[in-house]
Amino acid sequence: MVTSMATDFLWYVPNNVEPGHRGDTTTEGWGSLDYSTDLALRCERSGWSGALIGTGWGRPDTMTVATALAARTTTFRPLVAARPGYWNPAQFATAAATLDALSGGRLLVNIVTGQDNPAAYGDPQVDQPTRYARTAEFMQLLRRLWTEEDVTFTGEHYRVEGATVVPRPHEQDGRRRPTLYFGGASPAAERTAAAEADVQLFWGEPLAGIAERIERLRALEAEAEREAPLEFGLRITTLVRDTTEEAWRDAEAKVAEFAEHGKDWLSAWHTGAAVGQQRLLDLHERGDVLDTCLYTRPAAVGGGGAATTWLVGSPDDVAEALAAYHRLGISQFILSDTPYREEAERVGASLLPRVRELVGETVGV
Image (cartoon, rainbow, N blue to C red; front, side, top):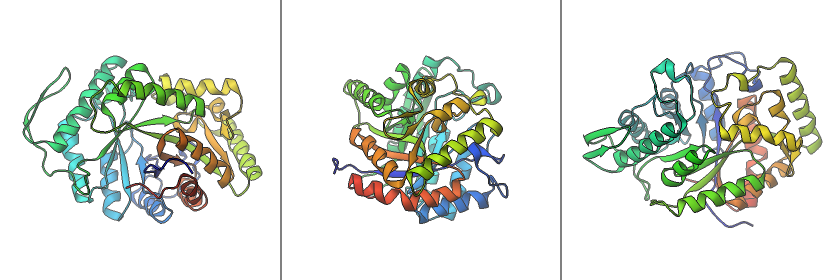
């Protein structure tokens, strides 16, 4: 039994118009409201508290999709990914507070700093240090606008005078606003996370790499003035089958299929040169399997982001691996595999009860 801390499990809504995202074989209705609603409802029935909704230029607007899904579900919590530069902070604070109020406090927010065709939506900030400085102001303003009235703020990147968001976010049991998730592995990103984020998200690195980063973030956090301690989350693909042998057979077959027919995800991926992505790509040089079941070979066929490394195995294998991350301090897990709808149910039924038993927690609230 590990030290008790509130643990949460979310799935993933790809939010793409074109079918075939990361090998999903669904062809009918892909990207429609009915498809995404079906996926969200399967998450509700299968033990997930909600799902990260993907974002990117040339894809459906994430806030609009999240609002539609919240209206068609009862407990599903959308984790809305949003970019400074695409959104003005006061506009986003109002849109997010409205959805949060209408849904009874179900909104979660993931702030994304990585570049995403900024010229297409008129964002001139492409320098990394500048983008992270802007992100820090963006999160500062969101917190203030969600919890204060008559806000005046003058920063290097944003300015508001006498701003009050209406309606206010839903308040209940000490919760005053949506949780702010954030990712990034560069020094600028880590300084931003330590000072401004509620949850720092990691991709699927080996345990030693995650432990090193947590130690560094704790040291940076000690230098910041925070409302509460920084929490940590893991975003990773999980390929789970009934037996270890079946899981590895399917994982190898899937990688072979991607190598022969799949798209080169990374070549078109906006964070292909990001520090965190490069850390994942470098892992493959250390071996195909690290720790107990961290599969690095997907990187060799162009996997990007959460698809660069996979946890592969039986429910017990993957549950033990996730529990090991939990022992390091990871409390938020965002998992996925394709096809998204079917795997949401399979992984929810077979994996989540085992993980919860190992970490001694039910789903976080």
